[in-house]
Length: 167
Image (cartoon, rainbow, N blue to C red; front, side, top):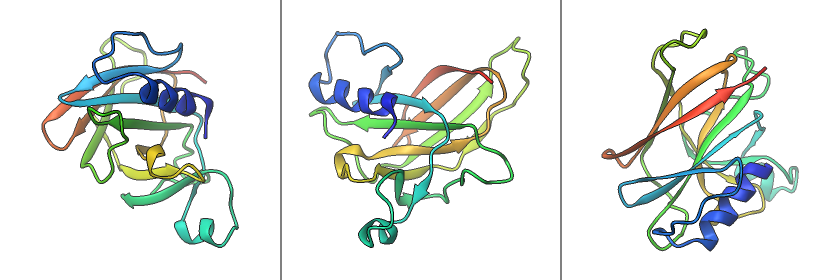
């Protein structure tokens, strides 16, 4: 699991949902209705199946639990980031089986011009970490620039994050 995701999980597990403490550097958390949503913006990561994990063929990567098809590291789009969100309920537990939508668009005035783009959302777990590592997102291709990223949880709870993609 990437360092940012590990920090996100650790921060969310130790802090109650209404905590006023700041997350560690590089971790961004916001509320979306009753959910605490923690952004993970990392280098693209490999996806594996539950069958591969059970067979002992892999010990690292993101295990697909459901949702859309994952974007592979060698996809023609050349994904360069793993854009994901950990979603926690009021008790601090990872939310499983949520309906999550993610979209991004370049920030107005940024040199990169990308209109609203929907991310095919995969529900995943970090290999070997179990259900408490459940998170949502996919590998994406983001040219250098600044982006507004909007995540919606279960249809009505939305929040927007700002991310900066660098080469």
